[in-house]
Image (cartoon, rainbow, N blue to C red; front, side, top):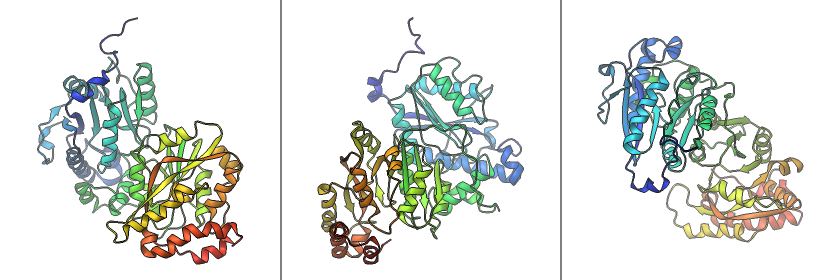
Length: 475
């Protein structure tokens, strides 16, 4: 059977000649009683309308901050009700029909002009630019891309082709919207990539989540922040898990203690990274809002655990669903292709786990003894048993067979690596993680000696408790 033009696969080779990717922002003209009706029942129609106006201003501004995107505003309702947008917009009319028909009309127009298109709603202020960047990159290699929201829908859609009837008859604003959309795309032969989740402002808990992220300066949405300033709501982020959740094989577990300054960067990086199935923060009773930040990030799970890195990592692993676990410190940055390196390493059934090489970098800028930091990396290039700052990964089945990390105050990573190596090969992959040099900057000679001498002392029988007394954490 021959393909129709609509069903033909996209010409990947033509990507280089394409201009900017259209980013269609779908918006309702903010008028009381016609926008955010579900939210209005909790905060009032006027407050909900003010929030809708502010969110549109922030989304429209954010759409212009990335190179390679051409924002387009499509409006339902009277354009006279729009707030003054910067940059100025010339809105298109969404036209008649249900949401699917209106979306299809705008996507068809954009695809016809530019060969592909992204689309977002106007109610996701503060969305990290990394996610939009990721969506654009994925659309260069896939027929479609979807960005899930926590209630079972999606906040972003991208297409390279629009088969007839693709968006007709889907259950909009329902818990199974994402599931039904993915199934429809599969039926139409679309190769679909799925981003990590974000959220839109439909419910009181969405407003509470965004306010936490704004309070800690994790996201930027100044107009929305101003609109939220007068609202009195409890920051209650408890919710049932989303019904439609796309899982992959890699679960990232981050043990934290007072890491509010560093954790947002890690979470944003992981949200924009391909191959990460879930992110779990295991918090040891932080006092600086670390757990609040973790719970506010869509798709990130946060578990409270007894203080102690081993206890926290075990608690995070206990709720993980992936077939592979990656244990990541909050001050360690993965390379963008970390999942690919892990997949390659574990392709051999004889390999049970592994880690990365380290590259220590100054914490927060230049450091006059910067070259000395490289001495801290010698261990990761010579040792057979990796430390925790090397981002240890392991098959979940092997982790469980070993009973997890030994709950000792120090050297839990070395002890785990030792026991894991007895089950199979460990592989140090040919890629680097960037590690904050904060400890070495605080006491350079002392900590350089510790990380190289402690393993010898531990093997010689010095107890973890005694070693822990010599070690002082620096934040």
